[in-house]
Image 1 (cartoon, rainbow, N blue to C red):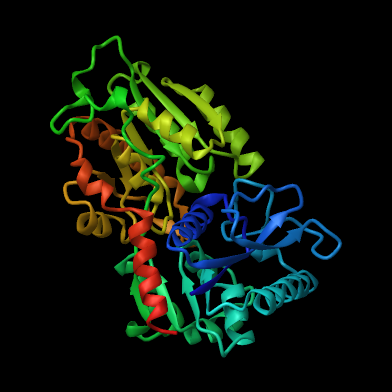
Image 2 (spheres, rainbow, N blue to C red; image 1 turned 135 degrees about the horizontal axis):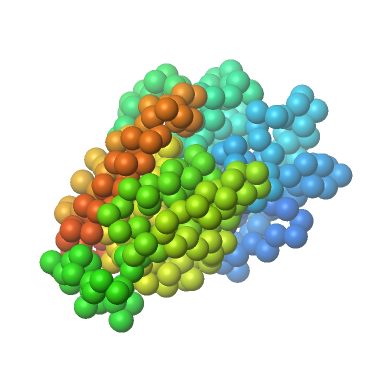
Length: 412
């Protein structure tokens, strides 16, 4: 099978970028011939296997004189919001991608095209190449975007239902896609996610701590409870609320909080840093980390906290479990049911989110109660047992790639 993967975003940043990159690597091990079309900045270094043909669409050039478009309003790199796109910018985006995709189709001759995000490019590819099977994967942020932003909405909603198959991360997302795009249920398949077990695992020094039944509540009083967050340092990821929640812990001075990730908005980042200065717990900002660095830092921690106000199916939760951490996560649609089905006994402590407006904006008055719930969940997570390692290890990229390849090859 010859597979062409397409994304408008950078292929090695954000959750969807990691998802694409890991699929490409997994398909490569299956000796599937591959090419990738992706949006990049001129200075970017693309880390994909050597045999993969790359057809980059370069932003901040004469052809596309603005930063890479981002599916979220705040990306961990300089980006353009779809909601800010003018007619001229839209035409430039369309022309640049159409030219590069046409080149990829002519030179690579794909049997199948796989589009990441059910958004503008997936709609455009479906319209341009009716004779090629075109599949789409939703990463959640695309659904949020179509609901929040009217840019090209009718065009997108017209063509997405014409995709051969749509892959959803979990059952609740499948139901949402059906509602948003009026698709047939049979057209949408739940595919889930995976993690890189060669990077995210319990290091030798931590194996004793990770034994079933071992609890970090028994650590000496002199040893700090080590919390970690990984993701965009932004308000919509709940980072400001996470910092404020530290004041509600029983002994915040005996807690350290590591925030691993790049800034979304510089203005937000500065506000979050100011919040951290007032925090009674020790707060450390690491900046963006490579996966191996993050895995090592996770191994040095006790509890992973993801207080996001919107997520699809966060891969980082599985990565944290694989590194032997207790996990606290906002109870967003689909996450708990997917973990219950795929990692029995995962032990994740879920926190009721605040009421929202515009999909991912919490009502300000609701935040103090959410922050108290977050602190209580951290205290509860300390008491939890860790899941059996074998249960986590079944969630691999190789397994996911096998399922995807099987479903795509049967529909050509």
